[in-house]
Image (cartoon, rainbow, N blue to C red; front, side):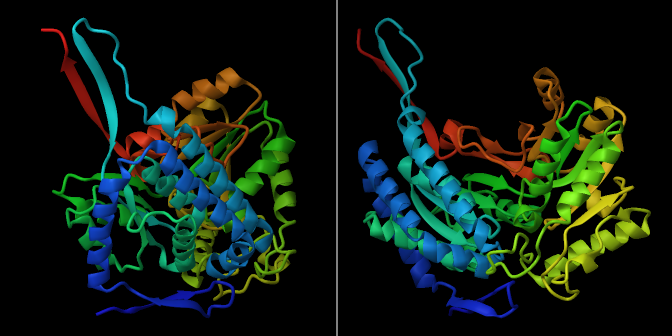
Length: 463
């Protein structure tokens, strides 16, 4: 028996899309087809795999005009920014296709008389990709394209909030004429997803989502000896040193805090500023934040759309009110943003000062348009505060001193260290995290290592 799934749009609170969960027979058929297709696919030359994947990327790009408003309706991102996700999708996909020959090449350990030795990279089999709604194309492509390039088949389970994204991926691969069975988009509930993980019929699971979701993945995978790639929560910090370019720092940190309504795993959620520049930094930060236009994401003038749903907005509102009750000061008046309506998903940006780590807003992932700013006396205090978190995805350092940035970065428990930028991703670098942010890596040649297994050849040809 299958149940209906409703996608409720944050734009108006109404049902935008309705689908049904896959029947068990459909799930079984998809897994069987994936295994059969992968057995043939892994024998295809890498150049042929690249041709199919490139055609799929081209096909997805051709849907840009339909995808941008769909994104606004599904998850609330303003249409003026929607094309940016497609550009990022293309950059990552094309880069991973381009580096595949090098990343998947056999490793030669060097000569040994009488022997031919090498280590090959073999595909794992079927990869289950469980993708989130906040950057639905970017996060999914991190795994889908390299998994296929490495010789695997892929089952995609996309978030309920972005059901149409999974369908767009399926359409792109159909237009690219990818062999049947290699890619399948399935609408699944939590029970069905757990059953697939525990079935022994997938060999790798790549999940992006909450810490609780990551624990559910580990529980479902327990005892089955399959690979897990988990990108979970974040509470990413920034440190502005006394020698930072303030204009550059403010412009980028405001954007890093509030782009996508703060709904980014690597968005800036807490900022530490050297005391000597703290007053000026805060003044500039607040001035720029007040320039946001909160409203319908379908309006070209809108620069800040709604958060994903009313309950998410209420969580952030509670964090703000709790922090104020504990002594924090809110520097933005929500009345300056008429679209901010209690009981809705429309939420004004907020800047908090006089905060500390006893407050939820500085400790727990907000995933919304709020940021706390603290003054610090030196690098040591900043490092201690940046590391005072259960999460570790990215951290940014704002300074003109390259040596200092690397020295500080060495001491921060994080997956990526940025200097003079934030909330960004370079596909040439591994995307990974530490602590409760997760395990594994995507992108770069390192990402291919998690989608393949090594196979050693120790061949004695002289006896």
